[in-house]
Amino acid sequence: MTGLLGLWHYWMIIALMMVGLYIVIARDNLVKKIMGLNIFQTSVILFYVALAKVEGGTAPIIPEGAEHVVYSNPLPHVLMLTAIVVGVATTALGLALCVRIQEAYGSNEEDEIVRMDVEGLARRGDRAESAPHADDVPPEEVPA
Amino acid sequence: MPSIPVELPIFILHLLTALLIARLRGLFSAAMLTGIFSLLSCCLFTLMDAVDVAFTEAAVGAGISTVLILGTLALTDREERQRPARALPFVVVIVTGAALIYGTFDMPPFGAADAPIHMHPVVQTFVHGAEHDFHIPNIVTVILASYRGYDTLGETAVIFTAGVGVLLLLVEGKRAGDPPSEPDHGSDGSDVPRDEAA
Amino acid sequence: MIDPTPMRMRDKIVLRVVSKLLIPFILLFGLYVQFHGDFGPGGGFQAGVIFAAGFILYGLIFGLDEVETVVPHRFVEIGSALGVLIYGGVGVVNMMLGANFLDYSVLAHDPAHGRHYGILAIEAGVGLTVFATMMLIFYAFADRGRRPGGAA
Image (cartoon, rainbow over all chains, first blue to last red; front, side, top):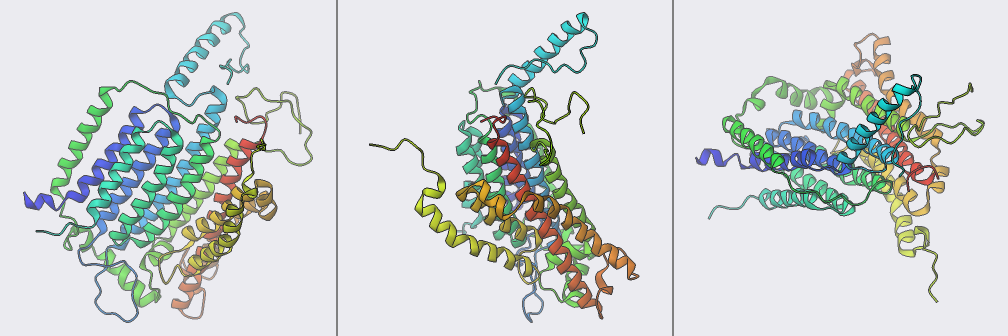
């Protein structure tokens, strides 16, 4: 059982992952979901970096003239650098979408947006029966 | 009395910050807490010898991400609506967490020097090459820019694509000499003119 | 009698003075991180973000018009594409000199120097793209809030 105790770092990271997952699936506000996604991404990156750590190792930068230095594994660090940057790119795009959704629907809560979509589709279905060329008329939205 | 590893209090603070972000309804406070979350992640990365990753997380996470979330909150709702707590997300999260923790039982302990990830010859090739072929001290930069340079080209293209995407979504392109178009209906932000224009 | 007009950020003395003191050092530090990415932690991404953070701070305190005068919209649009072009261009130059794509050893008289030059060139490209894209995203969000059609 003491062998398992050497894994507590990974368990803390899994707990963080689960908090992020909970925010994404349980909260309705879109910006909150993006924050939860950020937490999830950061915990995955922590997981990989924890895999790379070597006991007694040091940061993978070669010091001047030292011999036989033990380094932590640099390969996951490289992969996680890319992951962090891609994460911020997706966050920026997601937040831009949130801004546009707020302008279009007047709200940033997922259930209200779905309800407005369903109502808009129902109304457009009723209108399409009376006016067959209603293609490029935008659906009526709830005014902001 | 065994010594407490220094990561433990930082991990606990980290988890508490994440739980607070989940709990808070005021989104400005949650945005500030994501900045603190980034700072604590940076500390954890430094403790795990990932100094490049820590640097990037500090700059990108605590810097740019916080500014972006605050910029978004200036344009959207600032408070989350109160919802009744449902049981299903908790169940899903607990089951997934339990499955993942069960999956870690097969892993080598944290920091083991004989883990399979360290035994693969590619790591030794990179470290040796950085010292003898490149004479560049930062091994991560050597791998990022040379051994895995193609991935970094793709990553730079991803950043550029994110910029293009944000441009498409948020900036309504009007050049200096264009005639003013009719006001849009609020949902269609792109200026697709109804009549034939340029 | 209390003045009802709210103070702009640039009227607050502490913000103005401290940011004027800090911004040159932030930009200098960004350049330091860019060029010392080989010898310590750092590199193109971190440097681009730190450099952009300096200008974003200037924009937050002194106003969007001021920062758009210093770093024009056109420049950031061109810059973000130019960085990727530099990166790919280094790879193509390698091919033209006879080696594989992104094999820098042919860029100078001996392979070690060639690799060093190649890494410096592509880190410069990456730094330029990251800086321009961060500024572009900041401009996009800030312009949206400024226009009368956007949600306030």
